Length: 408
Image 1 (tube, rainbow, N blue to C red):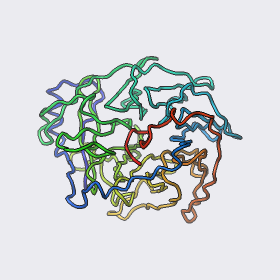
Image 2: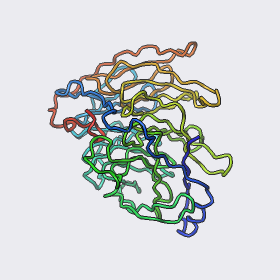
Image 3: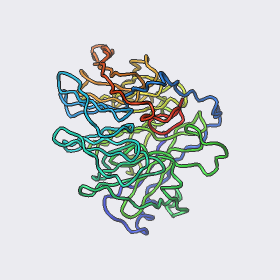
Image 4: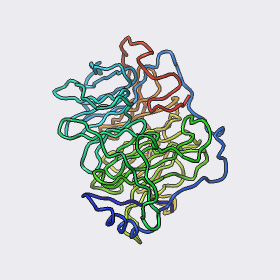
């Protein structure tokens, strides 16, 4: 079983104590190139459809069946009130990448340092303190963070977004002793996910020689530790068939360990578990890979209330599996349910009888449900929305996706 261990700090910890604790965690599993099929020419990136319009939605999220938001390119924001989808004024023309809800408040982040907050039914802008593109939002160790390009990481304190310590400590996997330090702003390529136990993305591989195109020249990683004192970076990757890989998506549950999943650009799925021998928390890789081709990663995940994980991918697939799925143990199941669009980028549902998917589809969402009598997909039904008349120039840079990657 492949897994990666890390320290979970809830309080400030002196460096010496951190080293001792790290040495007690045992071996840290790192993955290297599998040695076969590592030619970047084997990576089949999605094709870019309808480049002139790009009227695409990138994420969908809600608090219930009558309170759902969908946002995307050109700063577009729609709201479903239980009967119809209505266009809202987001106050920006920059692409909105991620929606996230905390304690009844909906947040949105996007390009140009955009952070929006929905209060009393309307969106207002928050000063993020950065002009860098933001890709991810969530709760890490009971604090709200926004993250993005070039290792950008902002923390909400009160009603203000502030900077975070920029030094990352690299440690020996066996002893926990510090071996090197990295700068978030110059050594990280991108941060895209926030989980209660980690912040994930990619770092720049110092040994890579060539042009950094798509995911090339980067490797997946997670930041853990006490952010007020000492960020710790841990490489994380699957058995690679492509030259590089990134952490791409996550689910987050601070109370139920098994409900924490992580997806990569190569389609590997990891689940957070407790190691039986050491008692440490580790990311355990779930075999087999979710996607069929390297470069077609797990773009978003949603966990319903009945213990089923839904994953959407760069190749437009919808995959469902039970939380207890294990090929080796013969428990649970995984099933491919849909593969009819260029790429899916977001998924959220009020329940398995009513969930939505968005992606590289012009002016629409997909609404579907699951019939668990035989685990089949009902639908999906096209839900059409009218994008406002905004120019293409207010959207994505041509040839790049909403995460800033050269993907098309």
